[in-house]
Image (cartoon, rainbow, N blue to C red; front, side, top):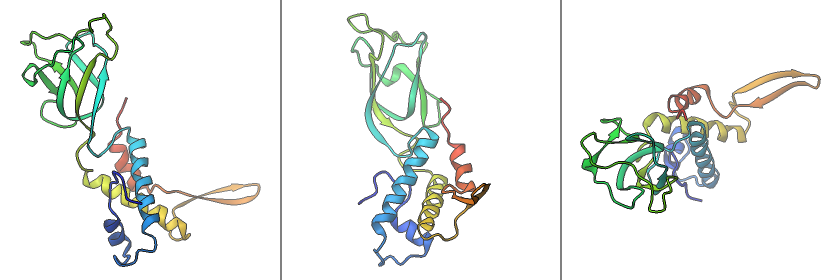
Length: 195
């Protein structure tokens, strides 16, 4: 298996875990764990920390600002509902000086307006082809959170050094492993996308 859009690498994991780079016994398992930890971070934050090239569709907004449903890194082509391409000189990306972008606002000086298609439809008629995601590569602290989660999951396989919560029940004490260390959870919370 190879890691697809993982937030850390097999070699980084091995360096953190002090596993010899020549020891390939658990490589497939480790790669699977890294990918699972990366997708967990995606799910918790409602965003991705890798670049995706795709076209997304939006309905005509009421004003001059089109709010996006995902993080935007760059626009390749912005096509209005009437199939006309809108040049970058006609709009501003919001926020102005920081990526990822969360909205597109037509300039007050622009003669363009968000518009419906030739059949009068206004739903999902504006298309944005571009690069989507938080950034092209994961920020350092997200990579660290991924390593912490992956390490916790890996160690749990062997029952060693596992963070646990204890619960007293009628059957006695039940130990439940916690795969997400509190430091990793704190990092992930900083990146939550509030929808």
